[in-house]
Structure formats: C-alpha cells, structure tokens
Image (cartoon, rainbow over all chains, first blue to last red; front, side, top):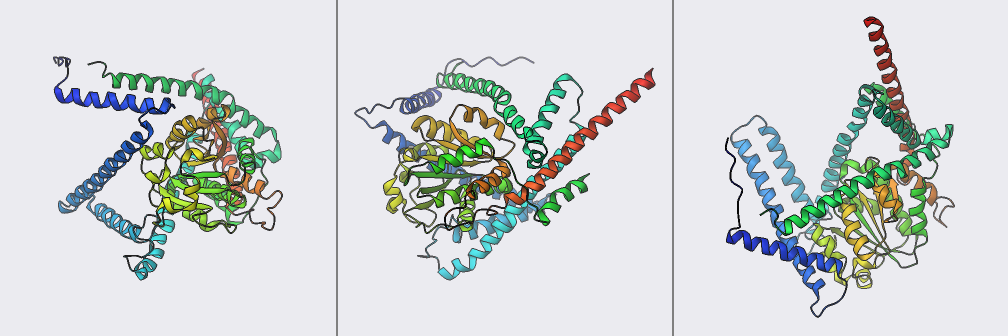
Length: 230
Length: 273
C-alpha cells in the first residue's frame, strides 16, 4: 500500500494556530520562570487568561453531559441490549444533579435566597443519603475487590521463577511484612527494612523513571512549540 | 480462599480489635511540621480523592484536620476532585472544631475546576474561587482578606488518589511559590512520592490507613489539653488489625503458591528422568 506523502508547509489557519501556541507557550514559560516585575503586569494578564481557560473548559464539560444524554437516549429509543442501564444512568444523573444543586457543597443557593428553605431542608437528607450512604459505599466496595484480586494473584502469579522475580518476591514480602503492624510485635526490624527498601532502592528507581519522563515531556513540549517536524 | 480472606478482614472489625503500631518517620515528620508552625499560619487542605479510596484517605484527612483545629492555625479547604467538597464537609462534621469560626479561622472554598485555576490561585485565590461552598463571596471572608494568595500558605496538604493533583501542586505551588507541600497517599502510590520526600520537596508522606492510626497515637500522646478526643476518631486503629491479618494471609498464600510451584517442578523433572 503506497504511503501518503509527508505534508509540507502549513496552511494559513495552521500558521495562525501555531503562532498562538508558540506565543502562549513562551508567555507562560516566561511568567513561570521570570520573577522580575516589568512595566506590564504579566502575572495579571496570565491570571486573566487562565480565567478564560476555566470558562472554555466548563463549556467543554457541558458538551460532555449533553453528549452522554444523547447517547443514552438513543440507546433507550432503539431498545439496544443495555437500554435498561441507560435508563438507570439517566435517572441517577438527573437525581444527583437536582439534589446537588439544591442541597450539597455545590448548591446554587445554599442560603435560601431564591430556593425555598423548606425545599432545601427536604432535599438535604436525600442528597446526604445518595452521596454518603450509596455512592461512597458502592465505590469503596468496588475498590475493596482489589484485596481479593491481590490474594488470588499472590497465590497464582507471585512465584520465584527467575532471579529477577525472586528479588521482586522477596522485596514485596518484606515490604508487606513491614506494612502490617502486627509483625512489629514479632520483630521491629521488619518496619525498618520496609522503610529502607522504600526510601533507598525504590527512590533510586523512581528517580530514574521520573527524570526520563521529565526529559520526554521537555522534548515533546519544545517540538510542539516549534511544530517540529513540519 | 476468598472466604478466609473475608473472615480475616471482617472478624477484627466486628470484634473492635486494636493493636499498637510503631510510628513511621514520614508520619512523624508531618506531625512535627504542623506542631511547629507559627501561630496564625495558613494551611491549605486539598481533598483530591474519589469516594473509592475513602477507607484509605478519609481517616488521614480527619486526623490531620483535627490537629490543625487544635492549633491556632487558619485552614482553607479546597479540592481538585469533584468528590472533594463533600468529603471536606464530612471531615468538618466529624472533628471537634475547637470553637473556630467559619470565615475567620477556616473556610470551605469548594472545587478548583482545573489546573488553570490552580496555577492562578498561587497569586490570587478570590479571582479563581469567587464563592465559597455557602455562596459567600470569598473576597468578603476575613480569612481571605488576611491570606489573599496561595503563596502565603505555610503548608499545603493534598489527599491524593492518583498523583496528578500532587504533581501539579509540586509544580505550581511548591516549585514556583515555595509553599511546603505534604501528601496523604494510598499505599499503592506512596512509593512514587518518596523521591520528593527524600529531596525535601515534600515535608511529609502519610501512607494509607496505618498513617492515620499512627497520627491518632501522636495526637493522643500526650492527650490535647482538655480534649482527649483523638483515639478512634478516624476509625483507622480498628482497621489496622484487619490489614495485618489480611497481609499475613496474602504472605501465606505467596508461600503456599511457591511451595506448590517448586514441588510441581520437582515432580515434573523426576518424571522426565
């Protein structure tokens, strides 16, 4: 299959976009690294631009909600296989949204200036029930299943098949022994070994990874700002 | 096997078993840092966790906030996760507020919607969070008049469940403005934070529920004057026994798995001979 020719040059709209990316990229880098106060307050300009970004991102969020509603409404209309879940999703979305705007830390009018205080008083326990008793517990339960996966994986996969896997196995066991407070009653050295493993060999490895990531991001950012390759 | 795991986790919780725990130096460092903050310093607490990690991070938030309220400090509550504001409210409903006044000593500013606002807050908080969670204009709050910019904070603590929040605070608050940063971390993510702790970019790392239990012990030794509240406030101490027994079971599983693996290998090699 013939490969397409690499694109040469830029169209006018691409050039305008690139100038904006280049200008803003260097502007924010300048504001971040230069602490001197020039005649124009760059910090104030930066803050103003950042508030515009917030507005744009919020609009993007609204588009996401509209899209979600459209997708699931279509599911229901066409009676697709999972249409019942779509109904549940839309009902949950509407219920949480309504009660959240009436009574929650996201309430539009928590002082009751416009919304009747009786409605707020009625909605508060419902929202608290939906959030703290249902959402928190469902999410915690799902996350807690990890313990069962780990137990299963420990039995089936965590084996000393080679030198590397043996090292990993021993280090993992020592960290687990150090992490469980009951082992400190048997021998206090487990906690010290755990701390050493985490702060010395782990830190060395993590630093290597982090420096690699940072250099990658730097190179990518410079390439993006200069739009290389064209 | 799953049934045994369920039993070793549930039994200690149902019987309210308690176990003593050694204090991790990383926990003690943060505790000491807060104890040594000058009076009237500003501390920003950022609730950056979803409800799925409540068992790990919520106890930490409770005990640290309790310590902050026992000291003459000012506290701002923010969040980079949409679940953060309700979690902050749950913490405030749990602790003893020690006669602190809303708006003067502490304020709940709600969600920081994106990193653009997080960057801007370093120099101007009210511009990016114009209303608090009670719909008061933040500019009218005495605490905001005293501390209008994030860079004035003496400490920022992020309870973080996916590292993006912490890394952005390290970049924009610690790196740029020099604000000391600490993290409340899940056990899974903590190893990734230790390079920042060793390089002194983090002033403390709390690792999962055990850190909350350790913190409870620190808060209670000696008990705060006139207020011996703190043992059991977060529920973490009773979770420690479950964690210990679950860890021992998993270690046992690993040992059994390896014994079975080597026995099987020996059997296969004998058959081949």
